[in-house]
Length: 310
Image 1: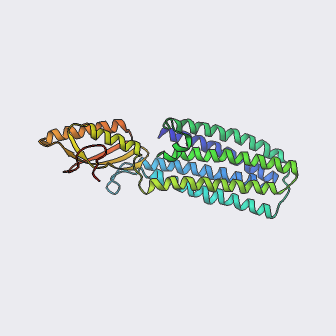
Image 2 (image 1 turned 60 degrees about the vertical axis):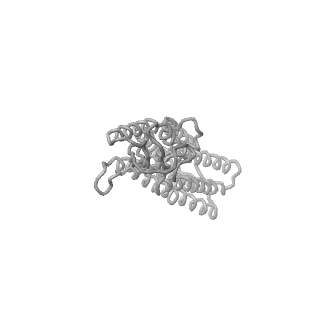
Image 3 (image 1 turned 120 degrees about the vertical axis):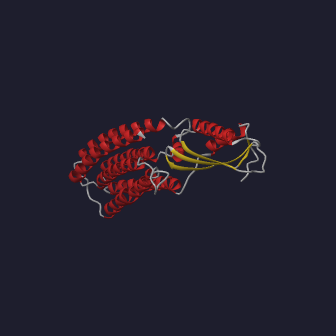
């Protein structure tokens, strides 16, 4: 997970600098949009620290109480991050926006806002580029959206999602600032804050759903399951098998359970060699798999791709 940590460190450093500058601008200008953006960056900073904590905890070795290790710590802390984005980032921004729409006030010294927003876009954009580069190392040839919904590395995905939302929020803030200055309509400041709040609520909901799926027990993709089935199908010593059962215990920790019927007449030493061969092939095809349990079982269904016993 070194790539994940690199992306997170980059995001934390950028967000500390950006949050400080946004709060300074908000104090001098009285802009609710800038205050919302400052809170957004402050929450993102805390989220990055929580993600680093999750990575550290997930590396704890297995013990008697957790025989499969602590890999799911990553998913738990990623879910907490999603909740914080929703409750703190989105909720407070939405509140600030509504208050300033109901009680608008003139934004002064707007030059502060322009300087901070443009600088923040550069910082956040740089952080986003770093995160996307790290994410692309395991993305393959699928679209970015599909990769984000399919990935099991929620820490890097969180940085990509947060930074994407941050850049979008900054652009919204810049647009509403310009509209407010050009038209003289004071409501645009509050509208900008509301839009940022809605953006963060949407992002947090999307990310929370992805984390929930992994927390309650998600298995390998259909594509990877098919790889395992093909390995079983092509092995001359396997006569039948049930559908593989799989479970993620972390981004790089997958459990695979197999019920297999071996060819008649094999002795225990021969079965051990077959099991080793199957395990080696599966781990080569799917590197994330690190635990495989193969149970020899009498299965009446004949071997064949369309005839897997349930």
